[in-house]
Length: 178
Image (tube, rainbow, N blue to C red):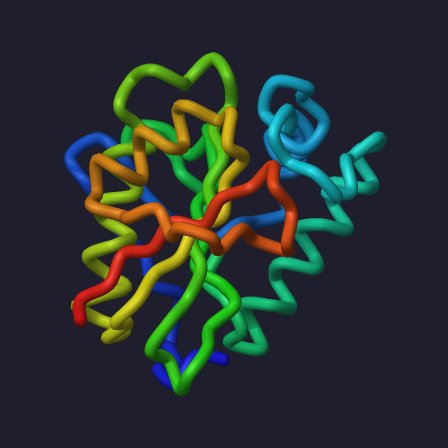
């Protein structure tokens, strides 16, 4: 649970991107993300969206997580439009706000444009400078080269002998300020 309670959702902006709160109007894009085989290729155990109703239920679930201050889940949009192109989140806060996990996904037509790099840099800065996290962890599939490369770009270090959920298909990466 976040120690920092926000009076309003933390709206973030970069040169090209706006990171805003997820809304019910994002249902089509959330459905696209959560039902796309390419986006979900390396995610095991996720409940895929089979219908628009599934996507809406997911949005409601995320709204409750945010309301309860258990995570921050941003819709990534291009600054000149309000259309969601991906998501990025901080969740699983531990140790009185010292640590959290980061997760992200991007619609295939927006990949390879530096969007996730830009969003990740902004969220890492927010996590360290505003929330005061000391550690950010990420769990990714060992074959997800794009995610591995992104984490390494931001100085996340692979944690030897520490696979997430004791599953050899996933590896833990950690960014630590200590």
